[in-house]
Amino acid sequence: MTKKERYTRFIEYFQVAMPEANTELEYKDPFQLLCAVMLSAQCTDKRVNMVTPALFQAFPTPQTMAAATKDDVFVYVKSVSYPNSKAEHLVQMARMLMEKHNGEVPGDFDALVELPGVGRKTANVMLSVAFNQTAMAVDTHVFRVSHRIGLVSDKCTTPYAVEKELVKNIPAELIPRAHHWLILHGRYVCKSLKPQCKGCGLKDFCKTYSSNKT
Image 1 (cartoon, rainbow, N blue to C red):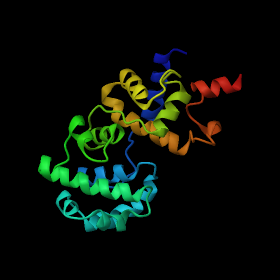
Image 2: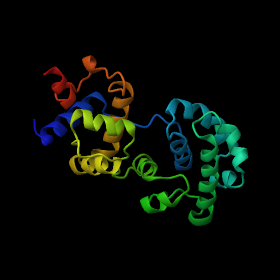
Image 3: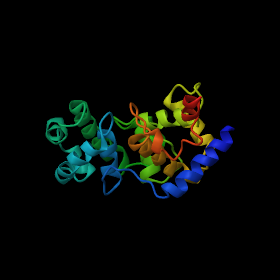
Image 4: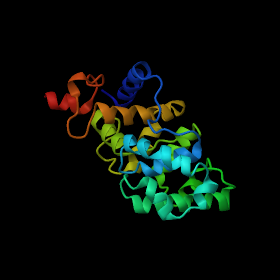
């Protein structure tokens, strides 16, 4: 099977199986989404969703969070991974939003990665989810599933290499959804330790499944 054929099958499958795919993080506006994505680094969305309601009630806007201290925010995020650094980054991020962006989350990659605690993956999530732009965020699920299915070659050894390959081969208008297709498939089916290949709808054209059968 050629790479083009594999991408075609991948897209055809998910357009039927998961026509609408969205983040599982709970938020009401771009600021809340940015906070949630920052908190989700090396942490589950389920845990983040347990933390954010109280956090957003206490600090509903960049202005209120910018006026807080790291210790103020820490109280609300102490159950997530790396709470000290995340609390500090949230406060610093909010302050930069107030100082440089009039309290608005920018819809620009370069401006996003200037924010404290915001790297390439978080910036791409924001562009894709909050602003519906052609951006592919590569987390551990996207990285793993892309390789296992055969969407990217073994030569794509970094998240950025995977990102470039996916963006090159997936139609621009589908990239925001494809990002979630890969995440959700990795989270619930193509799991890291125990992939559920038997019930997987992709096994007929999955590179790893085919090689394991031979």
